[in-house]
Image (cartoon, rainbow, N blue to C red; front, side, top):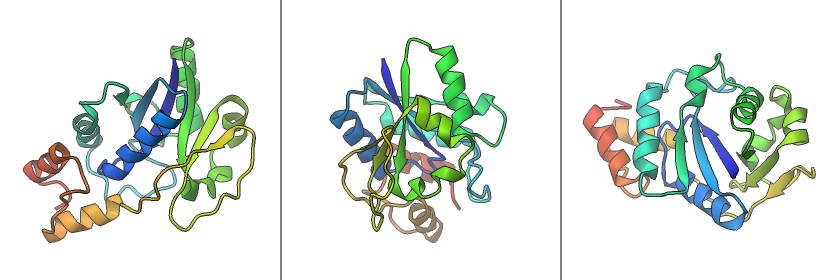
Length: 188
């Protein structure tokens, strides 16, 4: 099977993530999309992250009705911080019958050359890039495939700040994720 890996802290997962994943799934030859919940992104600060198990549960709730999406906690069992190349190597060895690729927003493509062993990623894996507002298509490489997807400017930061201030987050999150956040009093 061809598996697209959508890495993220998903703090929280929101409709923007789901729309991007569905669009890339629909417009490529992927068989499944795995949402890889990253316990610690080496390029991001930890201070506002809710517990990794809460973030995994929110992903599970968000995708439970989509048979071609899966939630993955693979990085929970690996050294931290998480490096994409290490996760790709581990998954490729554990599941040699699968072909893995990754999703990347065009905003993250600017930092891609700072990633650990980014050359190996480009050499061995397909990189699907989706557009982000204000970003241009400046990275050209045979392993990089640009996918036409809606320009969405929904941010987890905006959602967290809204929850903290008591504002509505309806229509930004799947309803079950919103309920989970409110019931567990996350981001307060």
